[in-house]
Length: 399
Image (cartoon, rainbow, N blue to C red; front, side, top):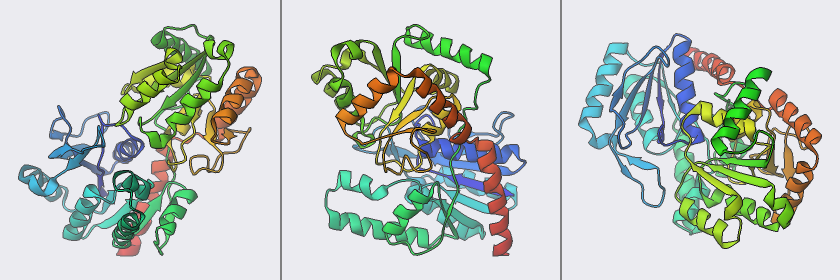
């Protein structure tokens, strides 16, 4: 098959959806398909990355400008980029047409995908990844406007041939927006594979070296993701502040990532007196280094009630590191408390008490970490293999 993948973010702007599209492109190409990935340009990125031996897919980028208030995201402008349009036409002509266009966003990339599908007769699949209405409310805090925005989202997903979501809970979010159609669940995976026991020890040592700490002390709690208040970072910081002085002294809170609220988050940590135990690493692009951080961490703390099916929880699970998730959240969907994750009431006192309890019970942490590795981890190779079968079924049905 010839497949085009489209999204509004891509490396070096790292988020879960961008990682998802990259792994779809990579693993589909490894399975012998001809794959094109399309995304906005970012400062310093080449406009074209030809297929190579490692990834096997071609990447085309179109012009973009900074998106105010949403650093580091950028607003793509493919309609104004004639050079990109010419390159895209030539790629399609050389490929002899397109079978599948898969968009991972209902915005610029989604509309671009819809135009490409319409012009080539390809099947358009689109994945609903995020609580976009909540994002909109951050910029325009008017519920009536947010409802109108959700209506436009529903119209977009109603215009494509197949709608996917990474979890049942995510599908329910789109249904709550008013979408009446069928949503197929296509789960996310992890491009961090579970290290072998000997390799895991090596990764732990490397993680300790990166953090300039011992292999076993202090007790490390890790967050990886966009530094935005929606991710409930305030809860993590407030929980750290609730810990007693002796408990706090033996803890290192590591934050990997960047985002529009990073400066405010750092200032808040200083204001409440926990900056001394916080280590803000910035964005970690090297997957080996990220694996080392996951491996050295004792707990992965991700109490977001905003996220739907966070990839980072699967990545941590690959390294045997259990996640603390907000009880009842869509982030926690598909996990079981005290079996393959820890669920907590998203309140500072409750999170502080759980961290303190788990720090004193390493056997419990190890047991649940093993459950996460066994039951939460899924490889992208397996996930994309399932997607390939779905593409084939959709294509046959469309004939």
